[in-house]
Length: 243
Image 1: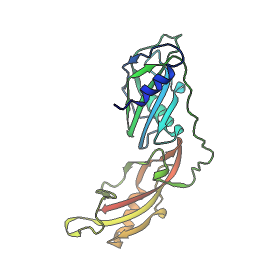
Image 2 (image 1 turned 30 degrees about the vertical axis):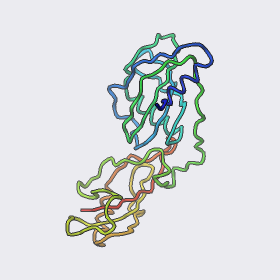
Image 3 (image 1 turned 90 degrees about the vertical axis):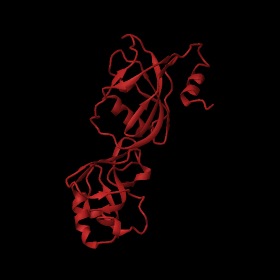
Image 4 (image 1 turned 60 degrees about the vertical axis):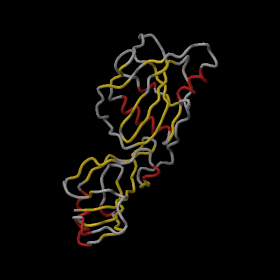
């Protein structure tokens, strides 16, 4: 049977002091939308933090012990932003207590799942943070290079892009669809706006629809992409229908 990453971590930590780890049910409750909205992320992490004495977790105490799928700093940014908007539902520490606990975190799009927590014998060592000096928020990055992918936060026009981006047939059957088939690339800025001037049409079966697509994109707002917690521009590709 596959041993979980958290179990392996706890066993390693227990090799030094003879202190037994205790499994403690814990979860997040009454979560609100973070002040800084989350982009879409797919990641797995193991974190450690000080057991809180109240309902609010001290996000400054969060240590990243392992991160898979994204940068360490990017994962910490999402976790701390969401945890700050939630109440901690679990055991309470005495005010003078400094109990360290570990927890597995799974992030799927904007959903964050947490495991039961385990007590640790001492403060663990965090993995190194991600260097951010080379990240330039003034240029656009491909989606594949992001920690957080942009999310649509609403468009002025109710009608627009729809249906299976990237999954449609190479030669669409226009007799069974309503609208125009397009393939377009555009840039979402670090502020979440779309500059129509960045739009490049690779395919469109009705050239007359281009101006409507540009107007539609200009009226959309996105939660911007991020690398290591820093907002950046994102190059987006869309293939599908426009009506």
